[in-house]
Length: 154
Image (cartoon, rainbow, N blue to C red):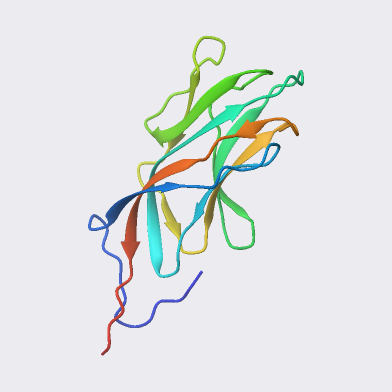
């Protein structure tokens, strides 16, 4: 994570709301929802991604994580529902979310803390237990409040 110079600061509540769409990943790979740019901090408001599972008989569990620059997981949210074969499910993570039964709905929710600040260089990603080569995530979307450090000349 970058170091801040004297005179640089972040002010909570004065950020810019941004919707960021990640790249559509290849089948069998996890969804990356973006890395926080230099001199910025993101407050994660929500994340959303669609997963289409192939016909392999095994249950998948999709989690949302935050990883540092070295790939170390510093936060993980596990929804209370799993996904089985040959299904399309919409995953959403947000504050106050409760899980859903994938047998009765296409929506599966996971919770986020009320204040989750993600520093520069950190990455928001999925991690899926039992992900198969034919499983296919759509392009992920996150909603963040972005705080950018203004540079001052003192």
